[in-house]
Image (cartoon, rainbow, N blue to C red; front, top):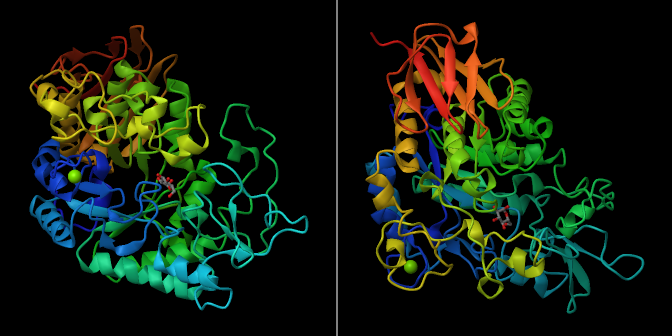
Amino acid sequence: MDRDDRDWWRHGVFYQVYPRSFQDSDGDGVGDLKGIIRRLPYLRALGIDAIWLSPIFASPMADFGYDISDYTGIDPLFGTMEDFDALIASAHDSGLKLILDLVPNHTSDQHPWFIESRSSRENPKRDWYIWRDGGADGGPPNNWLSEFGGSAWAYDEASGQYYYHAFLDKQPDLNWRNPEVRQAIYDVMRFWLGKGVDGFRVDVIWHLIKDADFRDNPPNPHFLEGRPPHEKILTQYSTDQAEVHGVIAEMRAVTEEFDNRVLIGEIYLPLHRLVAYYGNDLRGAQMPFNFALLSTLWSARSIEEIVADYEKALPPGAWPNWVLGNHDRQRVASRVGAEQARVAAMLLLTLRGTPTLYYGDEIGMRQLPIAPDQVQDPFEKNVPGIGVGRDGCRTPMQWSTEANAGFSTAKPWLPLAHDFARENVASLGADGSSILSLYKALIELRRRLPQLVTGTYEAIAAQGDTLVYRRRSNEGSVVIALNLGNEPAMFTSSAIGFNKEIMLSTFLDRQGEQVEGELELRANEGLILGPRQD
Ligand code: GLC
Ligand code: MG
């Protein structure tokens, strides 16, 4: 692949690094930029094309970097601007793109903009945030709830008004209706793009604009007991407002002041609303993250339906993408089980669209249960005991059998998985049948077979636990057959065609086996079939 090609983000494989947990270099138990540099050869060998870094900017770390106090400064915990410059240079030298996290919806309450804004009602930055008088009853201005528990409005004694925070009260929302705010963030984007950053993943992009009249949100008639309390009301007026698309088009235009950059949006919405984030005439985000696989029932029929719905909903010319995990969601290996994690990998890397991997999923890392006294995540601290905690998917990367899994010489900021002595990069890398070897083989096959990247997606009718589809381009076609069940399955159909042979099994052991219209899938097995090579 020509990496300077305009299509790099369509053709490449993305990989999310959660910097706190990837590699520590200075012995403080927290991952950092020098640590990431040290691990670039690993990422290169894995075969990925682009790294997305969760926030590395100056922050009081109330939400582990998603509360920024200086958008153009590196937090000392992660290193210095020199380290960053070295990271981007080494990444580019290794042929890897580097994407940063842009967090424009809110700042830290310690950001100088908010300190000014808060200082008085007359301050010129007052309107940079969302300040409102209390409601008629003396309470908050409306019924909007914080995703991290409680009202989304915090009262400021000194100035007698409330400010809005969709997340922690330490994360006040910026007022995106204010043109100065927009320009300030666009300048932040230009700063990083000017340094050669290849694009942004934009945090909670669907939150940026709120209802101009701050109307009360309606109750959620489908609220389930045991779910987080903010789900008691819908977010009809607090998120996904029509005007947000104008803002996103402006952000996109900023990225286009530079060559070949990409804008990715974090958006949790049903598919039919998600696709609006490609924008009018595709002038919005190039990749509105598609999280459909994160919440679907893990069954052949429901995945088949999601793929069909998504393919159908995509506007003409829009490029699809798929995600199996991130720093906010339960690890895929725990959600679907260790056996199905391999099938999930084959699915992610053979569907039509750019795949984004989450660090550690390639070694099958599982959700780690976190003891109450070890909890770090503010979401879990505010809403304890119902399983919302995100620490379990953020545990340190398991590199080797060394102390602390080779992650750090010090006690890591979150506990390590107990099985790291077996489940680590060094051990799994040496095992030709491991999940890590599978990920490498899948990425390598994707690189070799253009039909897996640019080919069409065609569903092939199947029953029960079997999911079958074809990817076809001018270069030829391949068939993917996945068994999502833990019983062997037999698939007989002329639709897969004759004279096929197995190119890859999720067990890495059937390459070259001939198939004649009848396919035996072992329990939890996925296969990629190509034309017979004789
Ligand atoms: C996004 C981030 C999440 C963070 C939240 C608030 O959803 O992925 O980690 O807590 O935004 O910034
Ligand atoms: Mg460190």
